[in-house]
Amino acid sequence: MADKSAIEWTEATWNPTTGCDRISAGCDNCYALTLAKRLKAMGSAKYRTDGDPRTSGPGFGVALHPDALAVPLRWREPRTVFVNSMSDLFHARIPVTYVRQVFDVMRETPRHTYQVLTKRAARLARLAPQLEWPSNVWMGVSVEDDSQRDRLDHLRKVPAAVRFVSAEPLLGSLPGLDLVGIDWLIAGGESGQGCRPMDPAWVRDLRDQCVSAGTAFFFKQWGGRTPKAGGRSLDGRTWDEMPQPRLLAESTTVATTVPPVVSIRTSHGAGGVTTPSPNGALIRWLTGAIVQCGGSASRSSAGLPMTLTQVPGAVRRRPRSFSTAASRRCST
Image (cartoon, rainbow, N blue to C red; front, side):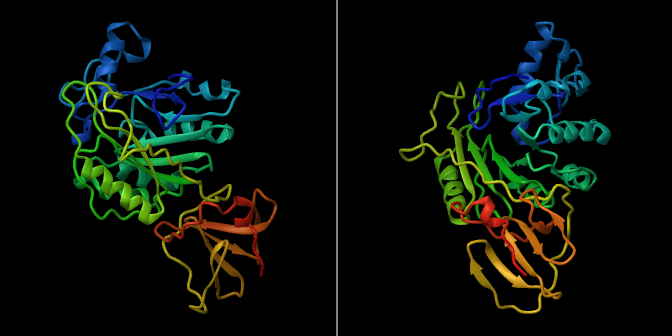
């Protein structure tokens, strides 16, 4: 783990676990596997466990590091943290009890923003209802080519404040992605020895899809012998867009259906789409959430009465210029 990271879309890394196993084409030239082998040779205590040589390697066996759980508690200044840059938190050999401990630390340090990335999207979706999802946790899946697009469907089931996709290394085109409920997409080419080339047309298509869908787009690198060898410019500019987190309640629950409405007539205001509900309250569609105002309600962080239920797949995007404070205004 490091107080600072060279990864363009984050600021620091935190590894409460290390080690992993290859499961898809994007893993074939894994930078973490290569680095773990080097760290083991240097005598690093965190990389003593060897992995299965068929899918992993020296120093890259899955290992838990409870002593690392407290690291973010010691970081006084807020920072954006990439969780498990040297592992996958949703690996099958990481117990759900330990995953909960990691989430507990993230919840207890709201000054930080955590970015969790996995290739094991199916297990993520299975465990999501067993976890508490604080508003400072961003959840992402890796999608390196068209064969892995189903990971997006699993991600949409997760009630995270930000859902994102890492298309790095981008190994093929991803035409016609369903970006409903996806807030951010990172694209990048592979780097290092044996790196596989990325077709510029694949990147441009992803950028155009994001622009059309209103999904923030971040172009990390072209790739090459080193991460910075090809630069980051795409058609004469850099793309460093960042997502805007959804409005979440302190305790977020997952719903599978959208409540019925009395009327199909809607009014489009600054807060999104507002629809009358069967009990006469208003249901307002906001950045991937349904906010019901009035009736029996809990308190939001702004002190306004509301109940909020995250509904995967039922998403309306808030305009970028629309403020969070304004999004919380409701009336009955």
